[in-house]
Length: 182
Image (cartoon, rainbow, N blue to C red):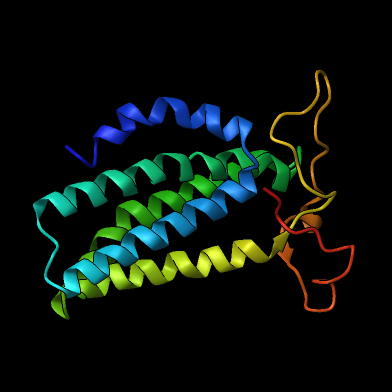
């Protein structure tokens, strides 16, 4: 129940939040939040304090974050793909999500339990941390994109080669590097 309730409580508002927030910053925030929640779960498992109530709260928090985090990539695809390859980009995104969650997720997620209970959650925490670090270093073409353009105006799409890319150490301190802003 705790894992399904957020889709009803948070889900209807997730789309509106995606439209109003800085999408890149929100993706980063979702990853950081998932690092904190899954990291707390790992610590609670290691200290033998992960009871049913803790698992229900963790499940509710993670699913609440996921309702937002799963809408964000769909909203970012037009910025990355531009107009010409939008269908292909959406197909790749949906295919990747389907394969990773439905086909690979269950076997790869349950296998580490054979080693120890906290292992799959520690791996999950590590994966969220890696993505948070990578997303925190991305910069976007044309500066910070607004989630809500002025009336009648639209953000120009990034050319495919100019999408998010890691900032190099040479540009990190220059005015050309555009960090994610709050």
